[in-house]
Image 1 (spheres, helix red, strand yellow):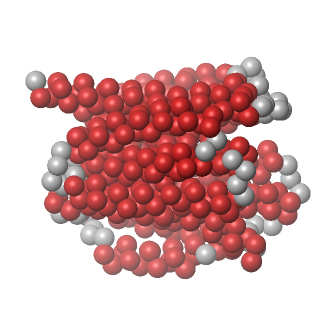
Image 2 (image 1 turned 90 degrees about the vertical axis):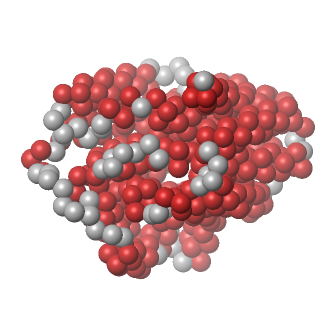
Image 3 (image 1 turned 45 degrees about the vertical axis):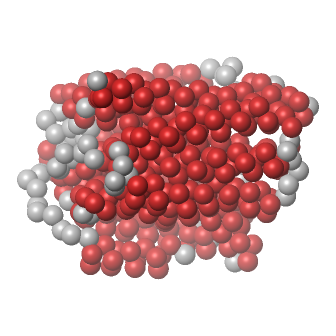
Length: 445
């Protein structure tokens, strides 16, 4: 989890240097990010299914191998096309790791320690997110951007040995590669790729361009064909029977809404701190660490609590706090006060720290024997899509409110843009809260 989260963020601050090194435009160098996102999101269901069929340990080790090789190729890249291809390979390895990481915890850890284990995973994820961008800047400044990838190689080799040594092996399941649902995997890859490209196009052209809508329709078409294929396939990569489990569907939707709001905040907050409050990038990184620090502190505690308390109750408390936090920022954003912003950052960190571990335990607790891989992959697919949705929705609302990327909004117009974007966060978390509360009431009745 540390490697995958770290590499999702460590490259961001190095993109201007990479663009200058290869003499390419911002649109071209953005493909370095997009290639990783497409590979790591669109194949989660595929590798989750393979983990259930071929064994979690095998796919997990293969993920480390692929991630390490991809990192080596990234570090040795001599042109932008090679780097983009290598990032795709690295993303495939990251997908194998993320798709089966929670499954390994749910499958092999003692039941009384599962919640605490998820708390540790969330903490480690927060560490990766927190140190990714600053570490990338330090390495790029003192060494070169190549080393932000090369540092993964010794870590990856050590992780392969640890996995081989300590993760239990499973009995070989009856499965032939000829039985694998290759058409379903191709349709899923096409659908997720189109969806990610569509949101990326909205970021570039706004609501008026025709290309994003064409790509979005293509994504819907591929998703429809994928569902039809999975209903008829003998060995589908997505077990549609999972979506007959109503609590699981509610927990997944709640997770999608909460993480969409969280990722939108993670994207917008640095702009508010730097452009509107006037802080330099190093101070912006310090303030962002407030939320990450709270996540690191709260997640292990909430995970441990979820081993003794109904995780649904903890998730609902977190969502109530989340609604209050986003409303607080909406009402105070126009004051451009750093103390009020710090209070919001604390509230945001506590919300995610209190929500993530119990929600993961709630979801993985519904996985029947032999389905931990696909449930884990489905959960992380929702989380990955939330990252795309969060950035796109918040950016789109802000851009429409302020008049677009080429406008020169006044501070008041900027505040209105942030207020409208964060009000979308209020609605998202509130929707997740209502869904969870209805299910809790129905279960009690």
